[in-house]
Length: 158
Length: 158
Length: 158
Image (cartoon, rainbow over all chains, first blue to last red; front, side, top):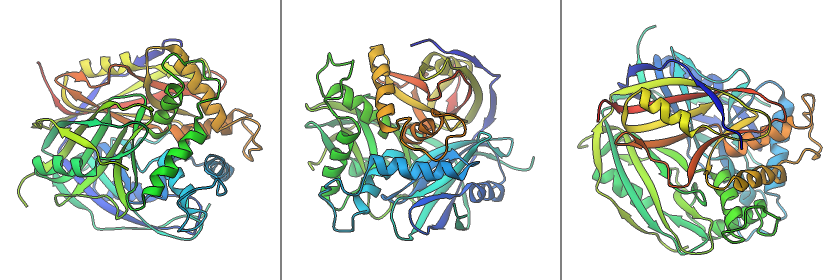
């Protein structure tokens, strides 16, 4: 494997002072990707976040958090298909008391994960140009989901 | 994809003051899910963690960290099956010097990941009702594993 | 599932004081794993990081961040193969305007993730013996990628 030709920018240092916490309640309409970028940005504005990182945590085992493309909705359709390939309903799961979509949902949540972070710099969330933040619902029916939001870093006016 | 109907709670702010670090040694008995929730809670009690986040990091490449359902043990059985589907032993892996279970174990560790965090609020770990913290062992034989635990936030009496 | 026989080390506590941020520019040569461990260590040296955690974030949706074995290069070859199994090019993806390698790249990025952290203790990054940090490029052609690096914790001389 080739070595990377990595170039490191100037390092900028500020003080860590604050942890701000909030809970985002998300109502899903069944299987699919639900963008929560706007809600996370709103949380950062409320906390007057300047420099640090925002930590997201989903309190469920059959949904997940994903950073993915926010331009073409076909991408989200294909991501749902890809997850079905990884965890089909008819795979002979032992755990099936909660319905055929339940165990696949657990597998999808395991593979995607329920915790992630995004940097915040100069009061802006440092998502890439094409990145959006999504709650991926893996159950067929609508669900009420809770995302815990935390900002660690320095707050204040610009 | 539908927009989310997200509702943001009141934001609560405290000071970040402390980072507490510990190492959890886990002896696995071979492939499977090993719950470490109780040990993580014990770490938070020892540090008198109040508000912040606990960061977990696994120092291995053939095991992983997973947040998953802690109610029905069948779920963990099916998660092991699901990982075998993703990375079967007989897939013609090039890297096979350490045995047929080794390369599948690396794949499973990549897909699940080795780093995650969980929020801590008012001295309580903010796991969802059905969530437990697991070390997933992907090798067939027993192994000695190390999980690094860190609490970032504010400590003190209630 | 058996309970874990976990043993917790003495907990060490220091003050969180600083967040240091940098951007690592990585030029990939197409699909494969590109090790960035040395660059992350260099960032920690520049910030004189002592105790805390380094957070990595990749600003892209068709590449990912992975902690994996750094000893045998065959492992990385097999990881690429494993990801092709999970997301083959000929799976009838709806989103194909950017080429047959594009949608599989999104799936691989979702499964691996774009955010992770590694602890830092006594000025050393706490990677396991066989762990390296990789930027996994999932597109066929070379790309310019940006990794955001942040150290949260205490800095200073040894």
